[in-house]
Length: 431
Image (cartoon, rainbow, N blue to C red; front, top):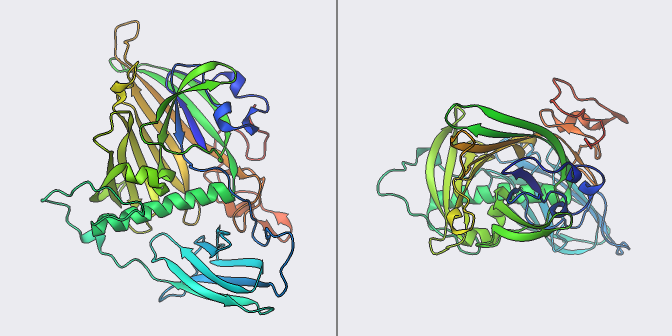
């Protein structure tokens, strides 16, 4: 999945209309402009789509049973909503529902591992043995991460920026804890996009801003994209040449973001440093800074990640292009900031993406100019299968609760509260 932020102006109308948004995203949003910024919010192609209660086998093995259960918190017994469950070697990963419940149908007899993950909790990996014809019902208890990170003093001596190994391990205990939670956020976003693919509408504003007198030339549009792009980070390849089927040779820039924190190539190509607890919109958040390998001479990214200190949910990510002067023409000062909101309990999705780039050439009055772009999520809908309790193919307002659209007694409840600007949630795509 990608979110387009063109650096010099809006996309061609020819690329916003018609049936193109159902095509491969990289064919949809390439621009005739000299440079296009594609903020890639997902890594990996769409995986097998398996709805809860729907097996992938063409035949049911003799003695197959239902495996169900609930995920609860240690000490309180409260359900842990939208934790992730996977049964190996089947590999059918999914979210639990709001009650922490899950169910798998038609599981053949044998030995399996149930893997459970949740932000802020210790991981669970437990073995079960399924007997022929004997259904299994589990209650799995998760313990909070035992840490006192809020009390950690980030002072002299300065912390080192550490390169994780291929498994994501670092020797700094506090960094290891928060980095692992950042990876969980990335894995949850990948699960959301692969197992429950969706399309989403963005309101975009493009601002050519005069840095001397603060005047601006504004343009607005609304576009629709899908979540299942297959681009993955490659070291030193964030800027590349490409070919567009309409406009021919073009130049693309793709900045890795949250989902790449679950990618080994990205982790091993960057060092990470825990920078302690900082105030973010009046609330405490853990900050991690990262930088690319200093030996890398090609453009890459550096930046910071902010994670809620209580819930470990991602709140903000900042990415800055490095070594942009090594390409011709140079790309200098580009920075992208993404903020996140919970669209479901403990499930975050980007809310707003802001990019800023100083332009090399002054305007007609000789003033310095910045190109600014803001992309805000308006609505989204799950197009194949949806997370538990959410109706598929219904447009959901970004500032609403997806559960408001869940089917109740056969009737679909309408969202309440103020509606976002832009297209109506139940209206047609904005072609």
